[in-house]
Image 1 (cartoon, rainbow, N blue to C red):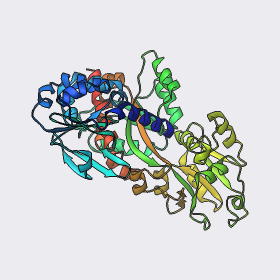
Image 2: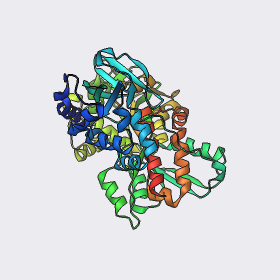
Image 3: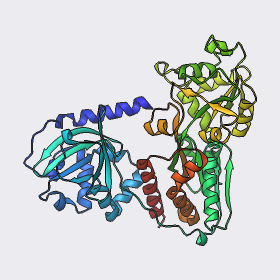
Length: 464
């Protein structure tokens, strides 16, 4: 996945590199953008929002301009929603515009006011320039009334969802899925009830895969909790229901998947991805094989079961990872076969069972969501991975190797047929950062949090 992202960014850079170093153009910002096919989507949206005259004005303006590929990376429903809602579209587009002319050499890290009214975060360092975490991939494309900087993503202004009056919400809500997301969704459900919701809300911890089965194959649930993105095969199952579903993923937090040992373990503080991989591939079966200074005791290995999204994610980052990244480069089936063959390994879909197993022996090791570590940190010790400990700073800096997004999934048809589901998701997303901190996870980045809110607005609009 990381290689794919790098390749995409490289291709985007190749697309726009010829524009770098271009001197001042005869045309305005809109005219210069219109002359480059990579900005056709941006120009169409600027026209639809009625901003052409504004951006053809005296200026000067600085425009952080997303490419066609940046817009294409947004969910199709979001782009359609923006096109159908001029006020929202205008707010998004003017968030990309800074009054005044800001050349790349003048960029300093800090907050900058936009034409939309909210501030964007600019950051300049040895790695380049970013705006709200999005990369600037070509700079200083000058026009007669300003300058264009090309960016590889679409940035979104602060998004306010409609206020939810939980007292007036009626009708049942059914959720099931990831054990990792379970405490997060439980916190949201309990807060919704405390705010006045008095109907029935169910939240079952059955694993990500089983949750998608209930949502996509049985059509029994309104929300699927997931610790990994939905698979193509699962989307196909959703589409094959008698009343087809098109799953929409809302990112609700970030987990630092924790590799843990018992607090009674006095010899281990961290592992590399390579060492972790060899333990879970069965290549290391005693601790002194990991390091000669460790006890010559058998490694007691614990793992979530194969229905768990945590299991899938862990294998992707270890046994399935490329060899140069510390993995074995195995295909999914080979990785599952290898971990299943580890001597004495114990699997459970219940994270509390894993907690009990690992905490019961100084020679045991396991992994699960950070929230379960925090809840049991008196009995457990979280290991540093590649010398980076799981904590808020490492997650924020994206340096902890096992950070991962957490999702809930629903469908516009469900939200239309059961408005209470949309109300609950709106309440959930509005307070997601609070819930994440409450249960021991980390808030999603502001950028993806805003995208989740726009996705919900688009889903609600589709059902009207």
